[in-house]
Length: 328
Ligand SMILES: O=CC(=O)O
Image 1: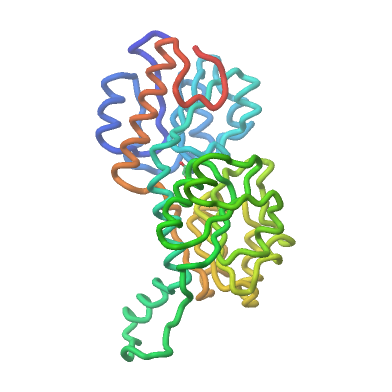
Image 2: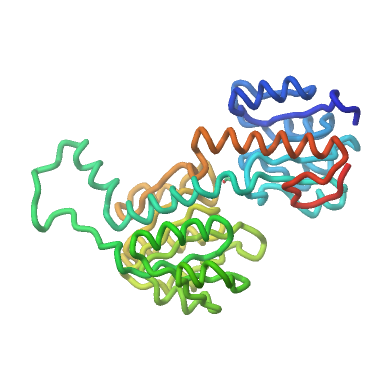
């Protein structure tokens, strides 16, 4: 790889300032009309690129990576989750993988909080009634939701985003509980008085609101299985801004339909952008189109991270956000 002539393929339209910088630095192929790439186009890209910049919408599976040319040394993912990339194929081919952590933590935590507030307080349902011209005026007994203050929030996955949610939740008077592979000592338990649950099952059975904030990995696929979802209280709410695959969606739909939980707020789905049509007929679920990190500032910061990761890598150093792989 010769500095200045590095071939970079970007799979989706990125913020203008990021694309401009990429054009200055690299021999870059952009996707200006933002049409998601087909598998054939992805294969074509990995055959010829030195660096690929994909996003969560690209399925970089073993079949795609099997076609990668010797030249493909770095996948600089635009996003934090890397579950759309076949890690073992990347490892086998000694491809370095980077992501964009930290810069979307606060935005994703805000969106999580938005759902934690919106679902029990029926924000979207209320707006819909008003727009449909069906509002008959204030009533003591109409459109009642449930109080947030004083309730128990159980966070599944106490990583960066989980902590940011916990800090916000404390401000809203929720008591914070969490389940994580490892107990997180320090600030979370001292400042936030968070309670650690070694048993996810036991935590699920006792919470008023559950927030899913863990990554999707082979170990967390359907972590909230049909069996575990049944442990939730009928008055409980479930919020997911992580990945759809962490929850068994069909089981969740059955629960929502039967009124076996009170409601759900979902920003992510198992087969994005396809939405299970059964969700659309349910009033007790708020659905968002994967907007957790969707702020102007966040998307520019993510692009800056991609630039730094690529630059550091081609300069022969370990990129700051290396997920797997060696330096070039
Ligand atoms: O969902 C978006 C990301 O993982 O960055």
